[in-house]
Image: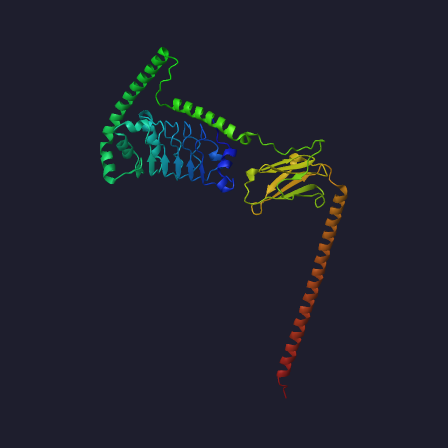
Length: 395
């Protein structure tokens, strides 16, 4: 049995450069999956989700997929429609050949009433054997435009609404009949096994028998694949951190050209590495140690030994959303005293220069004010002289 893991999702997301955060469509069919999981963690922006031909038993972990428009769960072991009430964008649901029976039809319909579903496929489910199935669903779920590939007409909906009370009564009797038939089937099967325990007669098609059949097929398929392509099943060996002599390996398998700066900051060692901005951060694994830095990007190792010991637990790891650059700031265990003195001296020099610039600016502003005052005085004196010249002398 398989699980929906991050590795499987990336494998199926090759068309999206293995990025999951913005993935809109994924197909995970014929993987013998038994559970829906991790999609709400890694792929919240999914619009199309294809999970047909597995052995999934429950509709779960879907409530966070608010952008999901089409969900295909055909050929699974679903017995009840549930867990899609919060999928506000869901328009199409395919549950062809599952195990939704009459006992779960009412609860399934109640779930559908909370959705805005337009298309529903239930062909091949036990509930469709009931004669009133189509009218019952149409009369209960107003949002549906199509059921089992057949358009719902206005006349058909009105008729279904009119006979709905009668159908609800008939459903109760149909459920009781189904229970009696199921008990009889189990009883007959038990007797047959007791009378002939080694019999290979075909048994009823149930979720259990379907699961058993799929697991047998999966085992046979894996054995054939192992014989045909043994290299595929070999465990991929990661590049070891240490060399044969015990020293830390230095390498740059991805060609990212990392840089380590010990001198600019007396308190910290700065590690920088240019990673393509489109690459999902979940593909980057960082390991800061007191004497070295290790970064794996899509299983390619970049590793650098440090000249100074650092506090790994106090290190700060950042990645630019614009450029994709990875920056790791690592506090030094023994800050370089010489660098500290140089930095302090430079700081004092910068402060002194700033003060001198302020003084020069103040002197310049004072001189400009004095010059302005002098110009104003000269202008006033000239104006006064001109007025005196224009006034005639009295005789």
